[in-house]
Image (cartoon, rainbow, N blue to C red; front, side):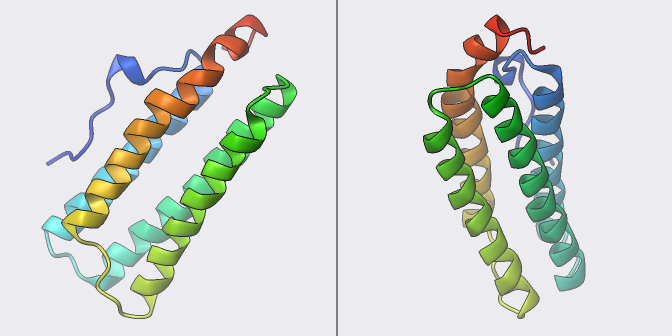
Amino acid sequence: MALMTWIPTYSVGVTSIDEQHKRLIALINELHDAMLANRGTVAVNQVLVQLADYCDEHFSYEEGLLQKAQYPGFAIHREKHVRMAEQVRKLTSQAQRGGAVVTLEVMNFLRNWLDKHILGTDKEYAPLLSRKGFS
């Protein structure tokens, strides 16, 4: 059962970023499925590690494009990425130490953060990237 579904409204007009956002949604859904199916700590931890690693990869890529485009909101945008990456790494660390951290509350947090980040923060840079020819 998908917790989050890609909708066209999420598109920022840059195919590579849209594809990465789809991958983040897929990882959140995979984590949600593992939690619901009670697959066990090892399976949940593996997905959490994948999510944390992919967040780092995506944030780095997106920030690189924003720097190339000379996005004026770069510092604020990057800070939001840093805070989210820290939270995901904290969840991963807690889970690896045996803490039961993947709950419905955690899943809703991840879904809501990604939804608001794409539709709010990421949509702010979309016009600039479009004007600069990123697609």
